[in-house]
Image (cartoon, rainbow, N blue to C red; front, side, top):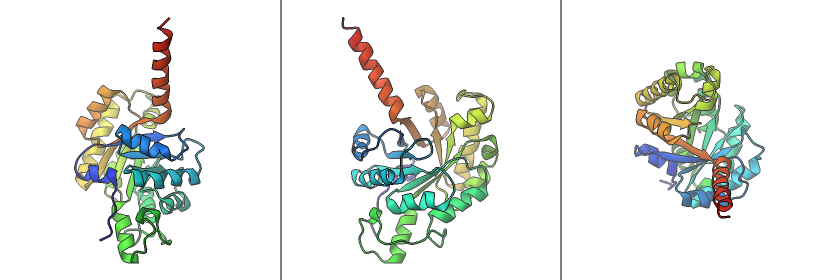
Length: 260
């Protein structure tokens, strides 16, 4: 069997937290080693909310795998070329935003999984396998097993359909996009609201029923993060590069200004 590791999936399969860091500002491959050293398990390479192009995303992805941190690309839409080009270029996972129903989840499985699970088209040697010549059946089975497919739930409709979405074969994780969910629920920014907590309970229950991994995004207050982790969230978006940079930089300038 071809040896391929997915650090985030390994932690999820062991029942551990898989900690991710969002990339919106970083554009160079050294971010992968830096974030691995910082203790993160996966990169949330965001192509929905910034101007990062595909070439940059896949270069970071290739470097990330070699650094031992899982590169996961959030695609900007549902077209096949968004997901498959990222995966063919080196991503070890895809995050699909704004999925409201099982049909859309199944569509993404079809695009991201090789037969017999889906209908992803086969290309030549893959960076995930170090471009080694590998028997086709072995290569596709390995890639299917070690590719993380994350479906984002960001509306009340999606939460209400969490059970049927979680039941879709080939989906690995359901990640709540808490910021957008709060907007859609008419409680913008109230990510600690009881209705949000209820949404986490609903999604965690669906994931447990169908053997999927529940995830959390858009919640960065440690006590509140603890609450949702206790409910059952395991795939955790732990922050984003720009806010973390701004926080550290602001603390440093405050410290220095106080010296005189």
